Structures are given as C-alpha cells and as structure tokens.
Length: 113
Length: 112
Image (cartoon, rainbow over all chains, first blue to last red; front, top):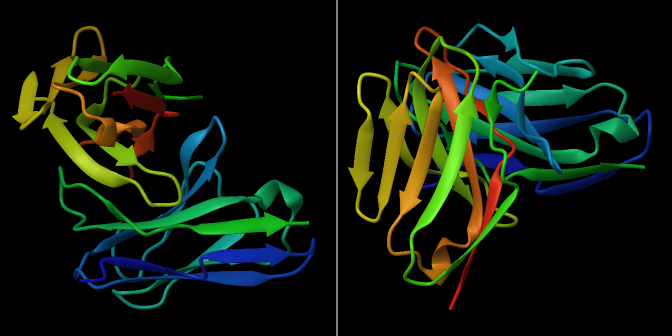
C-alpha cells in the first residue's frame, strides 16, 4: 500500500525557474496538505485542501500555488523559485473529519541555487 | 508566532530508562494533540494522539499526558529503546479545523 507518494524526491533549481511538486494519495482521504521543513523551524503549513475543489492558505503561502486536481492529487507549484524556498517539502493527507491523524509522504528535497 | 512549542531541541536517554518529551501550546482553541516521529530522509509517522476530553492516552510503551490548564502535554516512552532515536514532533489542531500546527521538534537519542 503506497499511502502518500511524492515526486520528485530530489530537485535542484536555478533561481527564477519554475516547477511543480506532485503528490498523490490512495487512501480515499478528503484533505490534503503541503508543509515545508527547515532546520530549527519544524513543519510549517504552506497550503491545504480541506476537500476536493477547495484550497486555503496556510502559514507560509507566499511564492507558492496549489491545485487540487482531483480527490487523489494535490500539486504545489513554484512559479519563480528563490533560494529562500530551499527546503524539504512534505505532502500529507487525512480523512478530513475531526480528530484524525495525517499521513505524510517521504518528502521532496528542493535546492534553489 | 509559534503556537506549539517544544523547548528542548534534544534529549539523550539510556536504553531501558524513561524518555519524557515536553510540549507547550498557546492557543486555547486547540482540541486535538498528536505526536509524530521522524527518521532522517523519511516523512513523519503518526505515533499517538489525545483528545482534549482526556488527560491520558496509552499505546504500548508510549503514553501521552495532557494538562489543559497548563496548556502542556508530554510524551513518555518506557522503556526507551535505541530504535526510538528520532526527531519527535508535537502537533495540535483546532476542533473545527483540519490543519496541524507543529512544534519545532525534539531530537531523541537513546544510547545502549
């Protein structure tokens, strides 16, 4: 059982380049999330999608856009990458009902040079 | 402003002893609390949770205690094992919300 799958696992971008991080879950979850993890900062929420067709900003949304393509897939786009976006990105999903845990993907390590 | 705080960046414990990881929160609206464990190069994995209607939840070697009046929770691991060495994140969510707010994590090292 795959759970939450993120692609790619590693990426190096030049400043100003764009890219899309892909995320798919096979657990029939309603809610999906994008977090970034930086040293000493824990995990910070970028965007989330409470259900198919809806997206909302999290704590650090600037410089990112998201698309909830369908119930399974939630992508994160960097339109013009900046060195400050060098981070490890995690996608997660949950059933979206109260008091349920989120399941995380393996992460995408992104470096912007 | 960090709403979930883990003030100890690291903790070292001997194998077989108790590990106690602490977490404080500032938002009184938080209603559900979770602990995640993270190994290097992997995503966080869910460990244990507690609802605000309880003050204790136990799952094998792991117990989470919640003190709502102090806005404090703790994770006890007894006995600690070397395989428990990882970064532990405390997280919280608001009753009507979906997204988790995470602390910065505590790196636990269990030595043989």
